[in-house]
Length: 371
Image 1 (cartoon, rainbow, N blue to C red):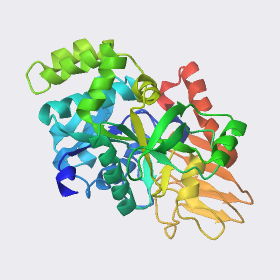
Image 2: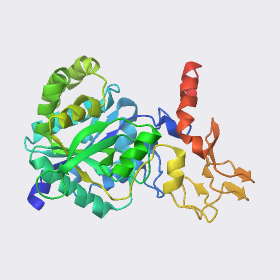
Image 3: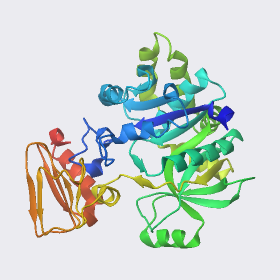
Image 4: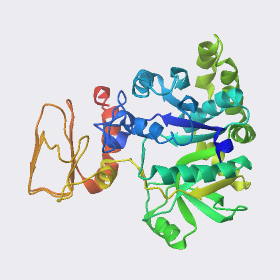
């Protein structure tokens, strides 16, 4: 397997503001920079560290925005600064992944790249490594590989992969169709059928195979990133980037490439049963971090270090304290309590997904200082 691993490049997408984790996650300090892993590592640091069994750190790239580039470089002292690819403005996941693919393909035309979100938690790193190696076998045959997660419940917050039979030898399954976030009843049907996996938003493919499929379906985007990549190592980089980047379509990689590629049989998947969690909201965070005997979770520190938090007769709380101020709660249950220097959030855990509506309202009110 080692000769195949020589060709792996890791790409970590460090974008988005994580509005469902407001007011902890802000535009200026988004969730991937926070230590939400149950250790001192940030989500971003944990994502990069997870790749060390697959590829040397000088083959790991991070795509991030102008506002976060300095913080990203500071947190990731093991990867070269030149591997931090800075987008002038957010253009969604397709442009970010395509830029990395084009830059990597110029450096190594035979490269296999893996694309990973910076805000996922994964419990079993060794199993994750094995699954990526399985995906690389499919990628070598030219398939665009995505990682699928066996559903544990009828989740309406994730997209799904409709799977067909095995694609050749081994664990690679054909992906027949990408399904958008379903209603609860539809999700229940997906889970019962056994033919559907959660779409984890992690991909493995030959960079040239992805760029060819991008050219077929999104010629304008493909031509744009090709121009940018050609100037990447030259003094013209900033000028070309400034001219071309704003013209690129703002579209996710699922819509732009993967749905169309699946329709013509070019997408495969492997089951990623390695303890995956998408840290999308405070309820999910409470479910994956260590709790005390009453089910209370204190985010950002070990459960034994309860300084700054005083809980009496509480159950199943998710508490995010801030430095220098006490959070006290008594006689309540199933709440999220988030304390930050300029904003406090209290919400029932079951409504944690709705936090983004508060952010939308703040935008409408023009209260951008809180966002």
